Image 1: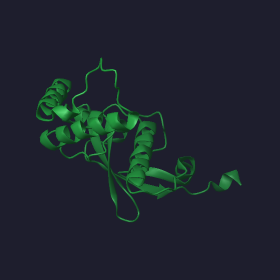
Image 2: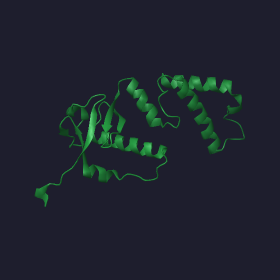
Image 3: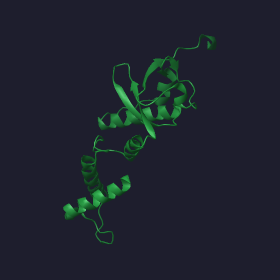
Amino acid sequence: MVHDRLHAKSENFEEKTPAVKVEPDSELGLSHQEALSVVQTILTDVLSHDPLLSDLPSCVTLEEVNSQIALEYGQAMTVNVCKADGEVLPVVVEQKATVLDLKKAIGRHVNLKQSREGRKTKLNWRYVWRTYWLYFNGQKLMEDKKPIKEYGIRNKAEITFIKRLRDKQAL
């Protein structure tokens, strides 16, 4: 259904702007940069006119589009990850996600946010997960393979980071 809407919108866009229309059999193909420009123009038009996708940024990834569609159909949920500085990260995960899936989604969300802000530094996620637990409703999310629903995490749940303490017995 969404793919049909995207196809219809792209056809509508081509009718409005024939200079952008590309014939697949043409001998003069587009350069990679020109093709990206055409796709970005069509995508921007689709995003600005579709109520389901209008909240997404113009430099959206396929994963973000798929996540938004999954949210709409109830196949995913938004988990609000609260950082120590007060910033809240709305992270989208599937309904059947595990703790590890949530960690990966947090990493993708933060990395994408940093790249959009033009930051060059990358976080070392192995270090982050060795240093902090995810924490929800009085419990540490300690088992990576355990579904987050088993911890009671539902749509719009707020999760925080909590510092891991060294185990004195290991010393």
